[in-house]
Length: 186
Image (cartoon, rainbow, N blue to C red):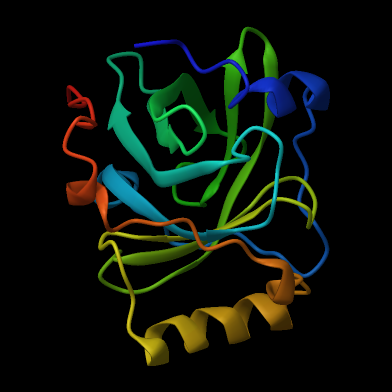
C-alpha cells in the first residue's frame, strides 16, 4: 500500500500551530484509554489532505512511550487505492484534557482538540488550530438524524461552517469487491 503523503501535506505547512480557536474548549475530564480505537469520519470541512477520500477512518492506539499512534486511512475515489498516514499525538497540557498535538512529519505538530464527546465515547467533535479544520467522528459508520442534528448544532454554536461540510461515503464498500480495506494492527 502506498504511503499517503497528501493526507499529511497540510500538517507540514502548519509548522507547529498548536493553539485553540476561540469558542473551542477541550473536553475535560478526558479518558484517553476510552478514546482509543477506531473512529469513522462522518463529516469534515474540506482540506487538501483528505480531498477525494471516502471510507475515512482514524485509529488511535497507545505507544509504549505514552504517545498515541494515529493511523488515518481513506479510499481515494479517483484511483480506488487506499491512502494512509501514520503519525503520533501527545497531550499539550494535561492528560485529563482533550487538547493534543499531532505530527505526521517529524517535529511539526498541529492541534487536535476534542471539544465535544458524548458520555459513552461514541461520537466526537474535533477541531484543529483554527476553524478551517473540523471533523465529526463516530464509532459507527452512520448516525441517526437526531444524533447528527445535535452535533451540527453544537458545531454551529462553536462557530464552524456546517453548511460547507463534506460527508464521505462510509457504505457501499461491498459494491467494490476488488477493494478490501487493509487491517490495522493494534
